[in-house]
Amino acid sequence: MTDQLRLNDVCSQIVDCEHRTAPEAAIGHEYGYSIGTPNIRDGRLLLATAKRVDETTYRAWTTREVPHKNDIILTREAPVGESAFLDGSYPICLGQRTVLLRPDLQKVSPRYLHYRILSPAVQERLHSHAEGSTVAHLNVGDIRRITLGSLPALRDQEQIGSLLGALDDKIAVNGRVACTSLTLAQAEYDEAAKSESWRSLPMGQSAHWLSGGTPSTTEPSYWDGDMPWISALSLKSPWITDSDRRVTQLGVEHGTRVVPRDTIIFVVRGSSLDSEFRIGLTQREVAFGQDCKALLVADGIDPIVLFLAIRSRSSDILHLVDHAGHGAGRLATDLITNVLVRLPDPSLEAAGCDRLRHLVDIGAQRQAENRTLLELRDTLLPRLMSGEIRVREAEQIVEGAT
Image (cartoon, rainbow, N blue to C red):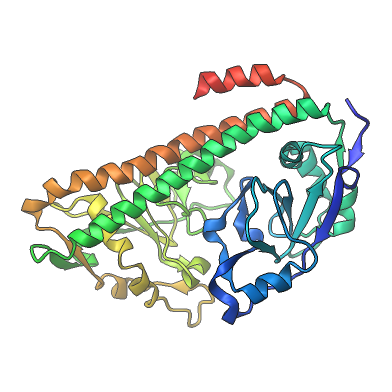
């Protein structure tokens, strides 16, 4: 074990990236990716959500340093302490409250350092240094002085980083498979919907519409139960299985509503409506809040088909969003219920649904596997960092769980 070190001691460079946003004219080009805090989540770099920028902006933003393989990107605001490891070279430029860390390869394994930053002990130190009453943020001087604790030998670091990295690599593959399967399902739906045998039906007639609610947040007995509670903030996946907030049975009985598997839920109020229409299909029984609507499909309509049908109208639905007097976007029920969706004749629907359901289910299965992998990674990470278990023991745990 080495002596206790600071972050500055194991990095050859720590570069503060400027508070900046790409000009509107630069966005949408195919040259580089603009990476900000929204593009770093759960220890991963989310290129799929990053804005593309033109060459001029990319060159201007990389004058101080070009991010490349083995670098680490750390967020210093909203939220503090997220970390992404660059396992390859990408045309990315950094801004919007990020810091570039370049590990010294003679002192620390880069991937190990990434997971060390994500460990509870280092996260606690990062958050304890965060300042600001409205928006917590870290200054670069404090980041440099963050202590890492005692580090194992480089060989042990590499083994720990490889094990945790293998779990993250599997999570990334599952994410790509899920995304591809849904894209294929949507494409097949869009092609089938052109058929003259299909009909156009208002969304209001396609399902029974339900409104949700929020149990009192000041009553502890209503929260931290077993039932996922879906809100505008937590609805981020096409497959709805869990939430960061859960209600108890008592909470269910006092102010919210429960819907079964294969219910369509979408956001009708919230800031996300500025840029996206969030919609998902429940994979289990869940409760939901008043910022969402839930659709129980009408007789003769397959929930998978209606889910894809509504997704196909996302752009048109976003044009109905009203911001007047509300701040956050709002979708008026009387407008959205009149949106037409293309559905097959009930007598013909069953034959075409199996393929669509199979593709959507592939995505759901991969997401379910990812939940297990994430829980496993988050359980092993602090135990490996503290030395509570050795790599070989962790490998046996992984083998038994996957």
